[in-house]
Length: 231
Image (cartoon, rainbow, N blue to C red; front, top):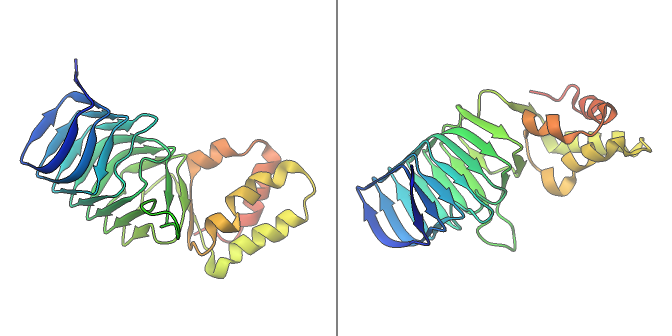
């Protein structure tokens, strides 16, 4: 049985430690420098793991990040960290993180990944020189062109579409403008200019697509739009 820890707060330097088979409920990490720390079979529930915090050479093995208010940090910086067979569940979980030279495997579910907002700080997600080849994206929304930088993406479960000079977005708008029923709504949302402008390629996860379309007709419209654009 996992040991449960409630409402702890971490700050300052945390070095060369191991946390095994426990649940952190409402853990808050602030202004911390965490280095060479191993988290093994640890669950983080409703926790904020990084207000102005840096993780270096840390390992998260078989961990779970979940809960209505869970976040990896706003902002947090992960350098040369390994997330092995981890489950990440939450819309805002990845807001405000910078991952550099990290390895991530497991599943990312229901997350939104986006570029930096011009008016709201610490909402962006960046993967720089990371390896995500063994990661599964499940209903992950990707809004931005600077999220993945020199990063290896999942080898399965994603579809890539060229959008040079927003050509695919314009094609979607043109096709949808000629349709006078609700079957076009899903494609209008997927290729909405404010969401996808400038993103090339456009990246969509298959599990999201399978669950998003309400009818066969709406799925057919999407496939017509992307004909000739898939990479």
